Image (cartoon, rainbow, N blue to C red; front, side):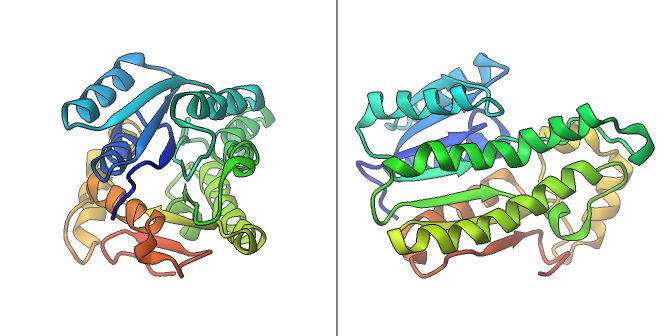
Length: 250
């Protein structure tokens, strides 16, 4: 893979899977725009790691649930690295909290949808006008989008299912312009997401049921994302690629 001279935006690119993706793309020559929202220290460390390895990157604070911030992120990328955006990875998102139906109010539902699905839509809308032929987008969906997720994750799993469907729709709409759109659907990956929202007992049980008998690593998701962005997979379009060690199949 050679991304030399190309610009990549990674939303939520400062930690965990986002950091691994940012580092992976930079290692193959991309100029990486690392988006963050909460912790500048995470973004600073990601930039440090990229630059220490000889790569180029900038950190941009932006709230992906706000249209103005999405536009500003794209503007910052173009100002730093040139007019064209070649790769977009929509990684920003989250569970927020585990809530069952009767515990959820409308505000919570909208918050989760905005964070995972609306943000993906807005970043497509903000970025695509500056993407030339041969560009590619990878969205972060989830195994939860296929199977409904664990207890209390109805809003999250529904939003990720929406990301999967939106990915298919955009692959059809943008394909004639030479822009490919795919998604990855991670299962149990060793990240702070599961440190926060999944008990040790559940993690042990799930890992025991995975044919590979372990959780996945953020670097393994990053490898799949980089491959889907590259010319090595130039005829893959509209796919939702499972990364779950064989636990579930599409």
